[in-house]
Length: 492
Image (cartoon, rainbow, N blue to C red; front, top):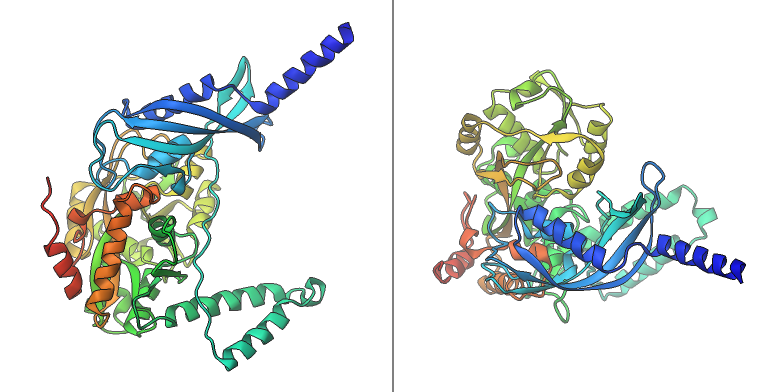
């Protein structure tokens, strides 16, 4: 009997070590995280239901960890506007409670009044440490969003080509060998090109959106993810803002997302577009959200201001993205020329952060919406910090780089960031060709703003604001967009 009692006790102990804490602990910890995010109680946990747990990867020191899943209802204790560009963004709420973009419903673009209820499916990671389970300071990874799919061309020639491709792709892996990567790369490129060239007529819009899984793609997916039926928007993968502008000019895409300062340079034929001349077919449709300039350094680097980057090795972003010309413009506003530092040619944002954390470079400049997810994760593991821009550099950057606006990255956006960080920001500008029919532009705008205000779109979508739709716009507006925003309701 004693042995059976011992076995039962051991089984209960092992079960507890697998399950993590019971319901009361996670409820209190989730509330504490939301309070810490805002510095006060903006969201109150009304109801909380534990939905199970699963083993999670061990901590760096080998400590056992589990992830606990839950459903909860939150109530706003005070008004909150997720489309206020100077406030903590709604993505921060999702990150604090361990929810995906689609894991929260009830939040709408614009002012959400006290008492508004949000429903969330979230998670929290725990580590087993004396005297028991403690919430871990980690950010659970989000699943990568699926890319939108395009149609097929119903011609006999296209069908024959598809059969040939299928035969090539379906070869046994052993036979295909090293050719697999080549095949995948070429098919991805071909698929992106097909999406951009299809549906140039009609009501559907193919939007050149940048790299798969990037900020632009995730934002558009957030807007249309829960839409019933086929979406009128198809998201096409590209290299970034510069390529998007060129695709629209060449009539290979009808619409795309372009950084506001890149669009301004394109329309005037300046900067990176000096070799192509002005791109005369670009027309602004709406600024969707801000993209602050992040200047990231190691906390122990001794770099305290942008001028300290002289003589340092700095990652300036990919050549075909919008980050690189913006970074060059901001550095110039601070009196720093490219000949005074060493830039990496085309590092991906993640590769640049990895190089910085390893001490192989001194700084990373990236133009990206805050919170920059990769930086948030990295700052949990590495001692990194953001550089603030001084008022003089901000004023010169805004005056010299058309399309930039002054903006603060709010305190508590990143681990260890206590105060606001003054910087400048581009805006993610939805751009269309000048010959896109008015009806297509109006239908697209109606879809975007109705989705953001519905309360069922992803949280990223709620950052959309009609009142800020022309912020950072220095290129001609599409006539249909001018008409749409001229008829908007006045701000209350």
